[in-house]
Length: 131
Image (cartoon, rainbow, N blue to C red; front, side):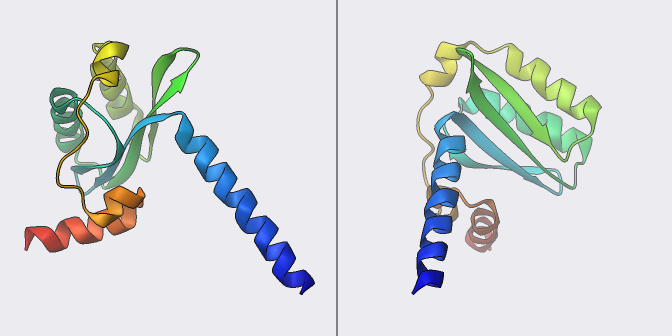
């Protein structure tokens, strides 16, 4: 019974941590083989296209791009991509206003992985939908 309690407390703590991190997130993009997939959040279509173009030109194998609210402004966090590509992404992102991000339409036609915010499942179902 004590083990169940410990696991329950650990589960609640992990869930709280995930929700706290995602509370500040504006959008999350996953990168695989130079392709970009919007997993969570709202992003203007034009900005998504421009960021995807930068990523496609880099030929990145795997990575992620997150926009988070920090100190009243949005900031881009890039993982798994080279610094040159990360800087180009920040330059493109910096051309957009905060109000433009807030007014972005919700994504249409999301799969279950995108609804849950799980990149691995979103890619799996995205690939299945394209076949």
